[in-house]
Image (cartoon, rainbow, N blue to C red; front, top):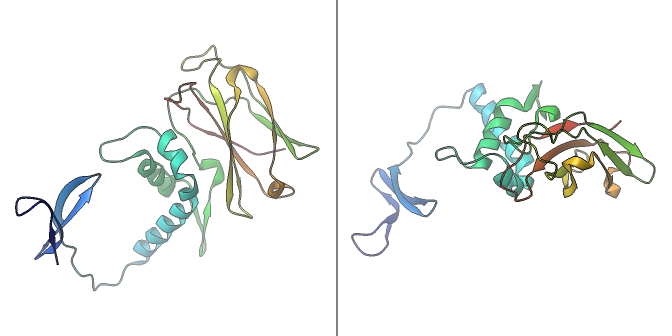
Length: 210
């Protein structure tokens, strides 16, 4: 049953015949009612659905970060939509019956700011991650005051850890105290720079600890 909003000249929600009324980003829209599907999905369709669920499960915990750091709106696609589309196409591996993230291809930010270069990451005593990089602030789309954010992912516990604005581009080094969960665990890391206003970001760089 459909429901009228604001009288007979307003929008409606629900189904009338073959038309469905709803809203998108606060705007009333009409669309054709979906047809009942009796045909069984193909293996390719089942795989795509599985990849979609897998990607959503991986990205949802960092959705607010991606919404701010993964580029700008492209038509009707928001930054998170762009991030989801990218990972579906580029960052999921199929090995037999398993879906796996290709961590070096995971991207947690995207933009025209110059990114990290010459990165080395070493684990030190006291569960400290020592990170070094080149000062490329003399190059285009870079500033000495750009701020570094590091994101860690621990597959064993399925958790992300964020260290935002922990150093400047010109600093070339920083030490990060890792969470207890990271002791002896598999660890994947990404780093990115953002401007001091937060309006622009770099495409993230992946690195592993030595």
